[in-house]
Image (cartoon, rainbow, N blue to C red):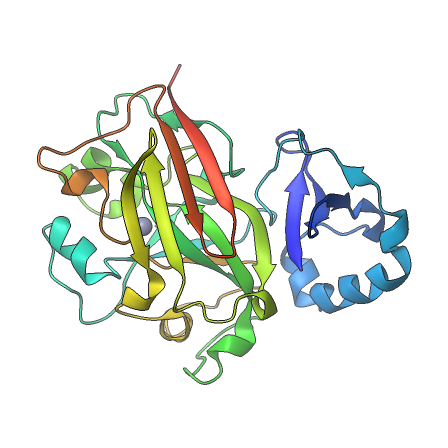
Length: 283
Ligand code: ZN
C-alpha cells in the first residue's frame, strides 16, 4: 500500500495512492500516527479495504499532499552515510553511524514551499531515503531490524550549512528550520520495496541534475541503521529515520552553490515517487 495524507496544512486526511488514482480513507477513522502503526493499522486497513474500497471517495489530483505520516515522536538522521558525500563535505568516512535530530516541526508536504530561513545564505538540498518504524524498537539485532520497519518515504533533508557547521555545537541548528523536512508523496509499505539497499535516488535544481546515486553505496545499510540507533534510544511506531544523502549537495561545489528564492528542487527515489519544492525567502 501507498499511504498519503491530503488537504490543507494541519487538516490532512488519510488516503491511499492506488495505481492511477488517490482515494480518501477518512472513513477508516484513523490518522497514520504512532497509535495506527502500533496497533497493526496497516493490516487492519488492508482488511477494511476489502469491503470498503469501492465506497471510498476519489481525491482530486489538484489537492495538496501533506506528509504521508502524522508528526512522529522523532526524526533521526544519519550523517555522512555515503563515502563520496563525506569527501565533498571535507569529512572522513565515519567508523560508526553519525546521528543527529531534525525537529519534527520541520516536516511539511512533498510539494510545499521550502522557506530559506531568516539570515540564511547557505540553504542546501539533500535527497534521502527515509525509513518509517512500524514496531517499537529497542536493542534490536541486525536480523530483527526488518521486522520493525513499516515502510519507506522520500525525504529532502534541507540544511543550512552556516547554521549547521559554522556555528558552535551540534548540527541540529542547521537541520530543523521550518519546512526543512519535506516528506512524501507517499509512504510505501515495505512489501512494495524489494531492496531498500539498492534504489536509485536523484535531485535536480532548476532542471539540472546535481545528485544521482544509489542506496547501494550506503556505508551503513537500512538494517544496520535501525539496529544501531535502537542501541541508544527507543524507536516508536511512526518514527522516521533518514539514511543520509549521496554526493552532489551545494556545499560540495567549488565554489559552493546555495538556494535562492525561486529555485526549484525536484527529487525522487525508485518506487517512492517525486517531490518538487520552490525555495522562497523568509518573510
Ligand atoms: Zn542528511
